[in-house]
Image (cartoon, rainbow, N blue to C red):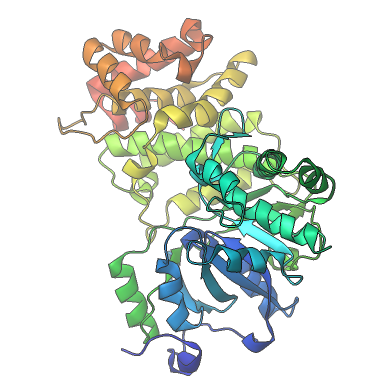
Length: 490
């Protein structure tokens, strides 16, 4: 089959949307570190929309920080790839043309630094995952003893960490008499712009106090909130895209129709007109992050545990179960009073949109995958909301069931007696405590709430929390997830 490329665009099936502008006019104004599926299904599509609406001529140069795989897939395709949106009504296909080139940092760090230092580069965006920031999540500060940071401090002209690369690029710009680029974090880190600013400042201060001061005075690190489900691309997806488009594409991206991008409007220089094509340019991103954390992530985790225990493999199956859909509605009714509505958002409408997203049968988001690392997720996703509800004297029946479902899940045995593959940083501790407690709900709840790293020192001693959690856990062990959820109503 013929490969997707600039010369074969005319061979695409008529149903496939293709770039409606002259790619030859694009200029590489954005360098993106970590050009994975999410960035290509989110930032690159927003940029594509701006290009098609004639809002500037911003092109993207991607940079892979570790392996050449992405470059090797996209180079023969002239940077083109297919975005397949899995809508309930059927697939929607679009070829994205905003990516112009892909560099591989380990092959030529100097080429990447030169691209960051080029006058036309005004934004350097990042999706490098949380671990790619070489920081301590508890403090938000740079880990100076991280192997990549140690390497970069010793080899400033050949950095391998994202932070080291940013500082090298900023230093080159300062030395050339240019202003800084805007560093735009698109990773799911709380207060991501603030965190990135601190990490860059910390690294620069370890090498050059004057550089750190220049970055602090002139740099721009907008906070962002990004949202779109972009599942990992499979071989089956690649084959399906080829069937639907008529061309072979080695680098398609799969995503849901929904997308959201809130961006703090603080830039060091020009930016694309993303706000004209759906992005929300705001003065403060924190309310959007908070809303997403409590309403989306909190519901996702609760549904993942209950859904898995009820035998549902995917979020769509679980949320499509009428009993669990009613549970979600009751859960959101408890969560919404604790969430200040961001500007322009009606929280009830946001909840309805979340349920529609969850129920999209074309997105196979596995409950087991979302259930991972619960000990790290519960404090932010559920326990903060519970504390606020308790302080207000409000009921926590649905929230408590989410916690109890996690406890039932980490026992490692499902409702049919099969083994659950529990993935969690505290898996050994969880196993020790659950095995000692057995199926005694009171003993099990006491053992797990005793993990202070998760529940703190306040919740284990508060019967308004422990009593409903223990009661729900007993019901989960005795009657199962669906019957327990059904007992709550909506």
